[in-house]
Length: 115
Image 1 (cartoon, rainbow, N blue to C red):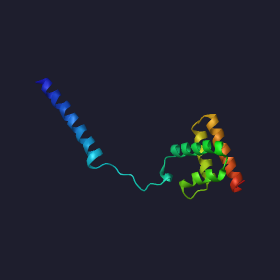
Image 2 (image 1 turned 180 degrees about the horizontal axis):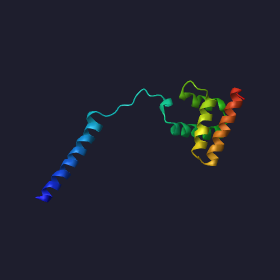
Image 3 (image 1 turned 45 degrees about the horizontal axis):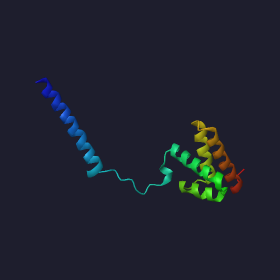
């Protein structure tokens, strides 16, 4: 009799998990659309800034890097890169990565004329 109860509990658990998965993935999945990149978390923004800094290191075009950072909205590319550097420094990114981001910030400041 005791095994019968455990079998019922396990069976009910599997049915509940299965029903939840079917409902969440098939019947009513979450739809994300019309989201802008400025809705990203700060860590993902910093990662994107790092990727732009790595690209800048190879092509040396601050205008292109500014356009790549402009997807984040109304802030200037220099401030976006600076915020990425601040986040990266606070969260102990590797020194070579910090140097790349700093190089991008400096290039954007010189390019835009911001002291």
